[in-house]
Amino acid sequence: MVKSAVFNSSPWIFLTKIGVIASALNLFHPVYVPSAVTEEVLSKKDESAILLKEIKTKKQIVVLDAGNRRLVNALGNRLGRGEAEAIAIAIENEVNTVCLDDYAARVEAIRLGLEVKGTLGIIRRLMELDSFQCNLEHLFETLKRLNFRVRTDIFWEIFRDINQKENS
Image 1 (cartoon, rainbow, N blue to C red):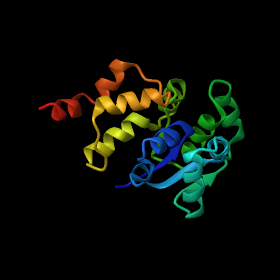
Image 2 (cartoon, rainbow, N blue to C red):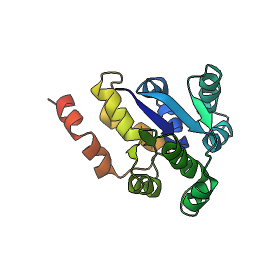
Image 3 (cartoon, rainbow, N blue to C red):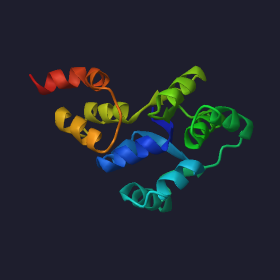
Image 4 (tube, rainbow, N blue to C red):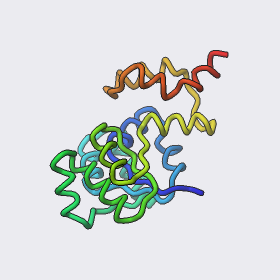
């Protein structure tokens, strides 16, 4: 069964910058992107904005506004606007997965009963499906260079069994 997903800006941007956003989007159907996230990504004027415009034009994603403004505002007291809208849209549309990297947003989404995938979880899934191959040390260095924030021990824990296969 293919799951639906709502993407926040961080996974969109980082998956685009490492060249796997198209494969990542193929993991889910349909894919929703909150209007606030679209605005944030398009303001960047980089490859993530160009690709978002292209994918939006081809109707490969659904851009939505969250309907429950009270929920968005309540979440917005602790989270960014895009994260709050992503969580609200996931709840309103009974979406299976919300794609978030921010720790506080992930905790809130889980508390509200949502399945959460982050950039690293999506990369791991693509590697499991042989849709993406890379040297993990190179991936870690690339992500750091792109200002992706993750503790070293967490990165290696996420990819532990893949790293063991790579080194055997």
